[in-house]
Image (cartoon, rainbow, N blue to C red; front, side, top):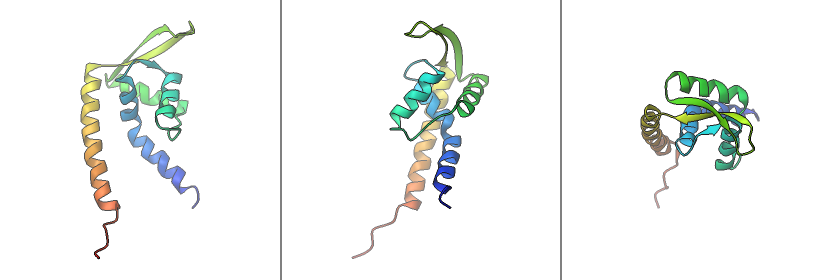
Length: 118
């Protein structure tokens, strides 16, 4: 039973991975490790992406034409594969975030306790 919160977190992450990645890439193109680091930073360590989650998700986003990739130099001079959101990706992200907001509001309506009558 004590592992359930971790299992639940992984399941929630599975359904949110693409939205989270697009949300980072709409700000600026990033390479894999940069995405992992930024995801951890912005979530105060809540999200810890692993390669087995990150790269399959990026490949799905590429296949759907939501992101494109290109090789470029990192600030340290190393060649990195950078991922860039496409116009179609930005439109999809807007739609995903609208649906997420509706979903979160509906969950909160059901899950949050109502104040007890006085």
